[in-house]
Length: 282
Image (cartoon, rainbow, N blue to C red; front, side, top):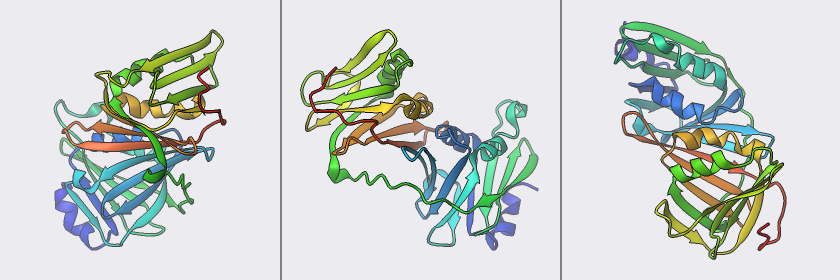
């Protein structure tokens, strides 16, 4: 029985029912935030937000809009549950390399409500399988209180140049320093490793920079260990928005294009490692 033939069976049982014609789209976006085993799934009429946190210092959110699904039905105002993200990704890729050439894996998800498992039904080349994943009581997620009114610096740029910069950073350094300023050097990434200090500068008039809105010079440092997981999203993205607020908290929003041309977003929040005086460029 195909996924479409099962729709009527699920319509009256699921709090959440969502169907996608290519499971790889969901798998790719979730891989971008997979740096811990568990994730919190928030379902609202707008779609799914999947959140992963670490050490109360970093948070990653993957947004999968309702419009990216062929079918998206939510019978409550919102529902939230915790799930093992590692297991979820294994299920989404259950067909692995056994897919027929040119075929895609269709996906249907169903969640019947509090305490119920997350049911995945996947179909590839006429082969149908289903997975039942235990859900757990959701933890309270961090509120980074990153509101637009407190944003002091914002840069939107093509991801390509930032990929090159991160590949050149000295990973023996404990921290990456972000300098954003309305004056030169405008946007600078620095590390302080065994070989000394290294810097990567991004002029505001670079072809790679699409928008530059910096209101004051700000220097903040972030642990490399906390930023490393964001490289997964960076490698998948085509554009990135870098924002800092009055406290030095960092927000990086990645625009990721799916195989079918649709767009998803991943956002990382990271707290600063230490306070620096404005104007400290070294």
